[in-house]
Length: 275
Image (tube, rainbow, N blue to C red; front, side):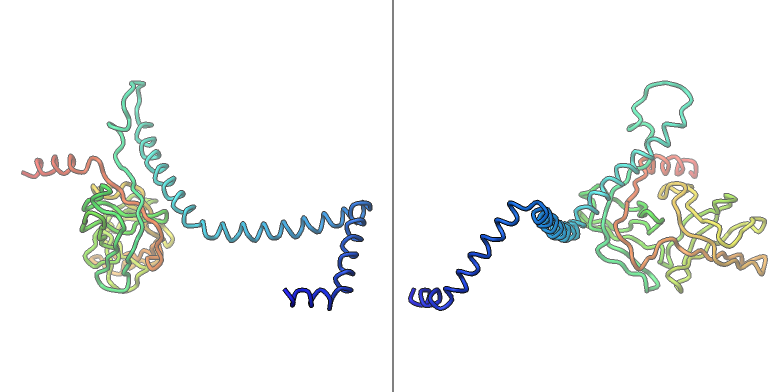
């Protein structure tokens, strides 16, 4: 208390000056419109800048929630799109439950918690499993194209065989000509896959788009894969097309797991036909 009294005694003239200065400023801003407007403008500019900085910081820390919301929305829209594509093939006006009878694929969102891309046999791990209706032999894709196929599923996690796996073999086609073949990986460049078994009469050009052909029970038709960057047709036996993936397999974000609702029915009838 004694120090506080000493402080006021020592700086009493300076404190009295500040008091009078504050009164003068209040009278100026309250009675002179020009100064008042300048003060309001400056104060608004400062407060707006502070609010903007606070919003940017808040927005940055909320990006995770925003991404999750977008992922859920994209999953919903993909499911709606698949139902829409199927129902538009009807030629009559019969009213049928399209969700039950016409949707062939469903999409589930997931995140990659582990990813290998620099080995000969690469795998990924997803943060969802049987508890989320995931199973073996389901397609894994993202907005840019194919990722792989689910291989091993536990209650909460799933291991995915990457397209960058020397055991991987997928059906793929050239979009412009509809010729199809087998998509493999030679284990060298993680950006380049090899499309084989394309007929010699197929017209292939650098830059042609390669996509899934839908002839398997795993990938839907028309999922993007990559573009042609090399053609090896020197001999009649070896016809290999180099395909650069649209995906950067070293940097993958959220993914979608695709379930074929007709998979077991198709396999059942194919097994009967092979007996």
